[in-house]
Length: 191
Length: 296
Ligand SMILES: Cc1cc2nc3c(=O)[nH]c(=O)nc-3n(C[C@H](O)[C@H](O)[C@H](O)COP(=O)(O)OP(=O)(O)OC[C@H]3O[C@@H](n4cnc5c(N)ncnc54)[C@H](O)[C@@H]3O)c2cc1C
Ligand code: FES
Ligand code: FES
Image (cartoon, rainbow over all chains, first blue to last red; front, side, top):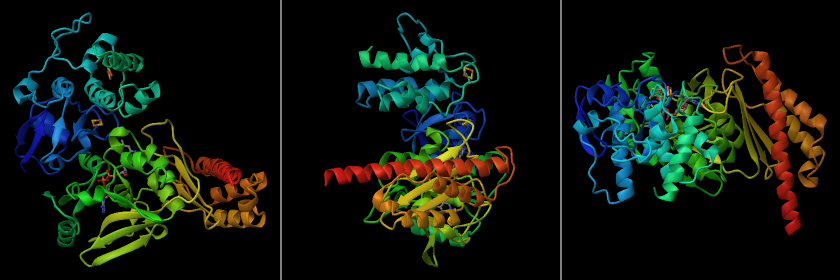
């Protein structure tokens, strides 16, 4: 079957989708957006987290056909999504599939955070050293970004709760906590 | 496989009548796991996400009509006062991502003995509104669970809503697991005080082939509270009464040994949760009584 939906602000069409296929599979294998990771395919790890009509979900548990006509944001579109949120108008465009496919972490200057194709939460993860192997990172970024949108001044308990569906095998979570606290502090200072 | 996309409830009923083997998919948090792991290859998958009514709820005089697909997150955010037991249970389900998708209709559809909504629904008192092209009926929650992962739905029926009694007193939910998030219950316990009818209701999860009420325990406690005038005098429940209640709740279990826990551990843990939830709810009942007497 064919599925039409919006990914990172641009309309996309996926063809030859098997009816039992997950949204995660379509994103990775049909649209060439491997940012969302496939680790467990059973909702346990959160590494496939995307936003579906704004709501964080495990894309491995959404049937592709359920995404028909809906709006998906993946980690590849997170920087633009965050930029649009701060420019507030929605006139900033979205991420084309080619741009999204070529996405690279630039602007890793941890001192200035300059020139970046990075959202504030991505920059904070780099600055706080919250990325080791990086497999969990995309899901955590999407989940953390959504929490900061909803709750700009989270307590540690709020952060733990919001990220409780995302597993990390490397960091022991402390640096991830640091990163989210850092992003929250920068956000409230308007940096 | 065919993917059916009914745009309305009527269309969904018609599709289910035409293809009784069609598997409805709401949040997908049970169905997709089975498909991803090739445990299930339905001929038809029927998406319920297009049916807006299913994600709505209505707070009535005595009951809340909860659409089958209202996600757990919405229950936690919006129905904490009306359905405290179910809101607490919802909060223990999996993770935010799962709670954003999964809901009570899917929990009832799967009818796993470990489903967290069940003890809360049993304790609060609820009816499941199901419908087919043949008509609509309401199944009392006590009659809904028919065996391990089996429920009372006919092949052409769909769950439309759950009618849950609004809380008329304190309710609690307790769950044993290895950590706080992302845990399937080793066992779980729901308890609701119903001061209006002067009754207590219970629900036990993951400690029998189906979710069950501890009816003998309820009867014992109702009689003991009545005899001692506890609802009026608001005294602390005698430890011997609480202990007997807990023992009877353990006795209502019919658990198995599995990877998550042994039968004897489950029986023991249910007794502990029964005593604790009784103490918590009763303390809260006494508190509101004192407050309302103080105000009078
Ligand atoms: C990682 C993970 C952790 C989990 N942890 C928990 C937990 O802690 N506690 C818990 O209780 N559950 C847990 N679950 C299971 C699941 O999230 C719940 O059972 C949830 O309530 C299912 O709802 P859903 O809308 O996603 O159901 P779906 O997967 O869409 O459907 C589940 C079943 O119900 C049927 N169904 C759905 N809607 C209807 C309807 N309207 N009419 C008739 N049949 C219907 C479907 O055909 C299917 O058989 C977990 C799942 C995952 C993946
Ligand atoms: S891959 Fe989806 S939650 Fe693990
Ligand atoms: S950085 Fe390796 S899993 Fe988190």
